[in-house]
Length: 196
Length: 157
Image 1 (cartoon, each protein chain N blue to C red):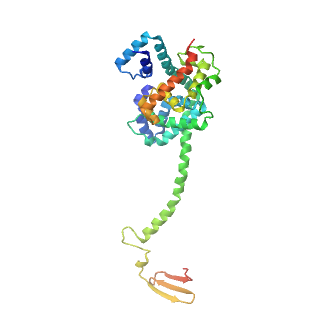
Image 2: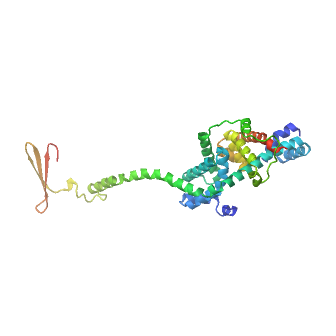
């Protein structure tokens, strides 16, 4: 769905139509947000299949909770709250090793010596660099769940602190401290890939 | 601006939270301080890399994501089914409720003008015969109307 579609059919109009029984309108909302939702879910649960299940369950749940949506609010903020809760629940249920230390993650990842690589600038470059992509996946997984969620919502989704606070039902101060911690941790973890 | 102060502001700067004048001083400091500039670039790079990572991982999943609606639609239907069962169960009450309504209307019609089956409206003569084992009642509504005979034996009609 293009940006034009979003202008022509704002989220609220689609929600209104979906509430009136138009399943096609709900499908349009899904098409609009499924990729972003998957990116967030994957960052939280770590596994692609689990992430897809989370996205699927979140959309089903959203469909049945649509009458709770308050017009005037952002649909995606409302939806992300469902998504993130679903993802965190799933991660807690399925995670076999919820507390991975950063050192362990990098040792077990057999990364190369510090300074071996230069950061990629495009998705294609990163896709071609499996070591870095997998290393980043492990580094994200090693973050505590709420730190992981905050940095994904901020850096990948570009959400404002206030929006993240609404999604996670916490204060803006908490969002800021979690974000600063997560950024610093990931920066340290990625140091080996940056230099040289 | 000192290095220590600058380092504490880096993340706020990345998120665009510094006031314009502070931001200007911050950038001035970065221009003349390689370690602080490097720290800022590394922290900013985390966000850039995460966005690339997300784009790559979503792209890898595109075939499955293109069929997501089919799965979600099935999930919606699946979840709808459990609601049907209690609804169907509720339907079983309908015949009983209808029967009660019909009987009520027969004996207590809404307009109050007629009550064809109410015993009080019967213009009849009743004769009772009693025996050792039963009570027999004859209800006679007239010559051309049927005669009703009630036999009550041991408490049963």
